[in-house]
Length: 313
Image (cartoon, rainbow, N blue to C red; front, side, top):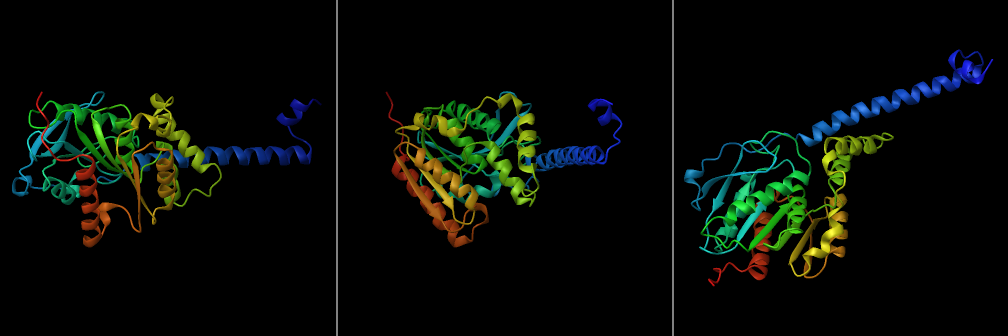
């Protein structure tokens, strides 16, 4: 009897054992892949936050704006809070699972110092349907927002500041690496590649100890975002931000992202600064911590991107 026949119709005990082991391994791989696929779907389609906010009674005289994003259907809703005519605009990029409405106190702090401020919801957040790509597509949204703002006659079209938290920080940095209009950056809990956020999502679900689970989830995420398969981590292009002021913020209570952010800071060109907070995530901070955070953000932009009128030529 040939070896092939023995595998097709096992008669020896060791062959039967081997076939049983192989069947169990195959079942394990299939089950892990199925669980990973479902888990990734849960991760890339977060529970949307942010209820209805009546902006008519909100201080700051916000303008309701809409802008289009290449490759997306429909229009994005946004709020523009006017500051000094001809001054820079600060675009606030919310984090994963958050929304623009949760940044309004930070908006007010910046607008009080004469900045124009712009906030919007990323895909799969707020009122927007879809799935997140953890920054790949979201950077296109930031670019589209800046393009729309630059067409206004009451802002400086060549001076923008970006603030972002995790997802928003990645999108802000990705956009800034190819946009000379970005003159200052505050990057809170930034990461180097979207797959790192997928890994963190698996760990938060308590499934990272299952063999091959993390890798399967990363592969599922890569399949969903196959058109970005050739993209390099952001650290490959950090040198393009030489001369652009950058503030990196990391939180001790989020060690995974803190470690990545610290590494990004070390690899970034000057000028750069680093701040470590005991507790992170602005939207969940206590009032006193929020005020201290807002003061830090405002102070940095005042120093690095003053809220002055553009000089007419």
